[in-house]
Image 1 (cartoon, rainbow, N blue to C red):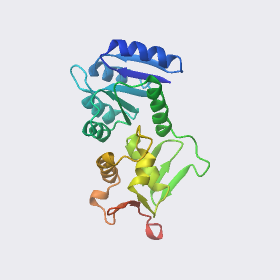
Image 2 (image 1 turned 180 degrees about the vertical axis):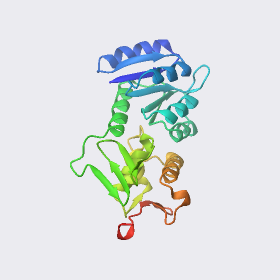
Image 3 (image 1 turned 135 degrees about the horizontal axis):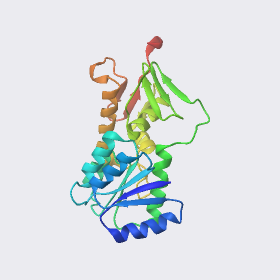
Image 4 (image 1 turned 135 degrees about the vertical axis):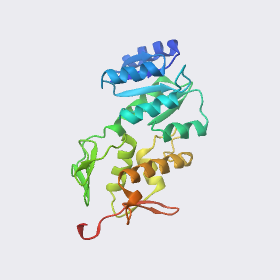
Length: 237
């Protein structure tokens, strides 16, 4: 496993490098966002990015936005700013998890492994593809196509789509959807209502990419106060 740490705390970088190396994680370190973007542009070699928010120059939120606009590498944000609003912002802009400082390196390693499991789920025992009309989700390939055209989805959007497609035609409650795609919260309860807004934003982005802005009926229907349905086409249309 190859991780990129973006943090101006060099002592933290040293400690994490030693700890993670003992658990099979090779860590590269850069101290600012600009260098991080340069490293990512050089090679598609990183499995995950560990990104601090309080960076010199470009802050971590903006770095995350730029990463998410070009790459599908998972991002875990590391920050002393642990307020709910900051956590929601991080998740809204595409972070896969949010770990407040100070943290136990063992917890961080567990978070890294959990994020990578969600980003690269193991092969399922069922069909390798989920088909809902002209929408096809390729599970081993981690991609989706609509009428033969590949959709440019973030890893988060793809997880939302997979969760809905597995139960196409059924209402997936907000709690069930959050449990399937959002990071596990430290309390041990997987559903965190504070990230509802983030879930709505990602569903909205997914709808846009599915063409729901100019389509009736919508492919993704809201069941007010309950959740969402990926609508099955009638008569195969």
